[in-house]
Image 1 (tube, rainbow, N blue to C red):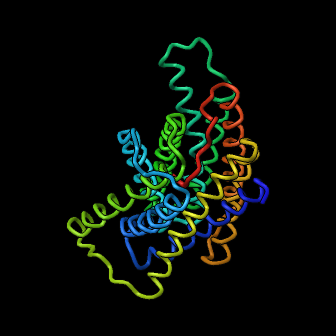
Image 2: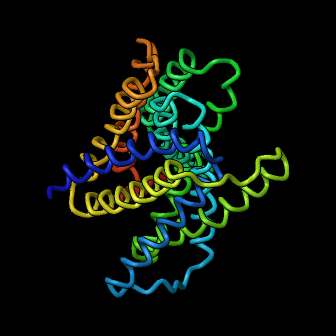
Length: 302
């Protein structure tokens, strides 16, 4: 299968996962969904590691810990936002990660005393935030402001997780091992979050129904399969082409939202999504020219 087709299929599966997360939010809290998603991922990736003869023992446990911590928090915030916001809005905010990485690059240049900051990169970041304002203003009601902030933070933390994935790749860690420990972190963090919500807000662990269990299984399988497809696409295809195709996830999510959840997306929201897509692609291209940070692109949803 061509790398471009693998990337398109991966984005479709991630968007479909978002639908399942939104539906599962009627039965479970965000912590429970994260935990079960991680459990299914651990079983699937552990089986693949055994089949391929890849050891799960690592020489850099601290790096995995920090990658998993930022990634799991990002995933939890994203699942929380998906449950409360229009699907396309939550997906778009998470896809801001490329713009956040560009902002981190600018901040790092300033802190290191660089005499020159690429004005085009600054413009891409500003364009991305204009897009966020347009997306949130028409689609997030006042009582949903915290949910919009959660979605925005999920993109920022996902950007940090992607940088840590790059560092792990340079340290020689295979992708299956990286994603396995991320999934394991999801199991632990999801269980802690669900237990905390039980004590703080009296939200007990939910019992299973056939529909709820099927949705949890779908979330885990869709996410893990999409991760593997995206990994293969980035390994075989061109970085900028893959990064551009990845934004089809916003389009797929918008279609799902309108068809399945009757989400209303006005002209301003659609314009904002377009600006974020343009800003993300531009930021990816400019970062690739100015830093080796994109030698390994993100290969998971967080």
